[in-house]
Length: 256
Image 1 (tube, rainbow, N blue to C red):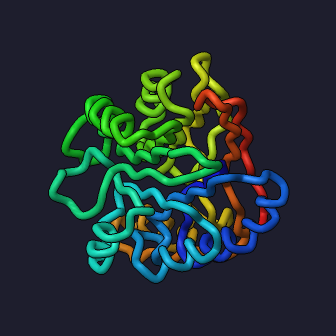
Image 2 (image 1 turned 30 degrees about the vertical axis):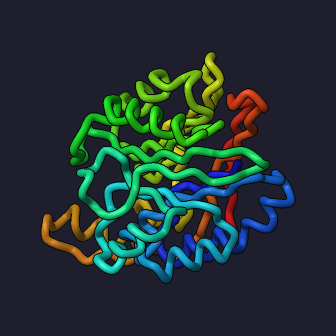
């Protein structure tokens, strides 16, 4: 499996499209997933951006705290089964928290969760994940991958240990900064605290530096624009064995 970290705006979308053929040749993935919650202008997702990522070769998309920032995404999230938003959001919200995709002849459950520290959720991710895993088991999922979109490293690490041996991977997203802790936990779950982002490294989390500095120095509302220079791909490649557990996880940090 290849997992692309938070795709930020047009630069991120273009980078994924450009890098994917090369990464397919190098890693031969059966499944390609990306976090698309920043894909539309750096905040949220819409149908045009989702279609662009699917056309580039992405099999499924996860989201996060900006899932509903683009109002024209609501119908898309209800209709498109290849997109998941955090499962621990209010149940009446648009979209779904998990889906099942086919890869290498196996049913792969893809689950999206949001952290509860410094983010707003309806239910604790530690409680919500139990019901979601039970539902994925009922639907016949043979492998489960989790995108844990969370702010705080301790919560992400705790979720990794909580799910160790029960899912193939817990991939942290949201902070846009790749961490150096990719590993397979003792029970066979691939884990990384944050996979990073696909976007401009000459930026502040994908946003133009001048915009962010203006906000910090003036404490006034500031319009953010997506940075376009020095674009990098941040991703992870995960090998999963026949038993549904991870064999390896490798970080991919490459300029485009």
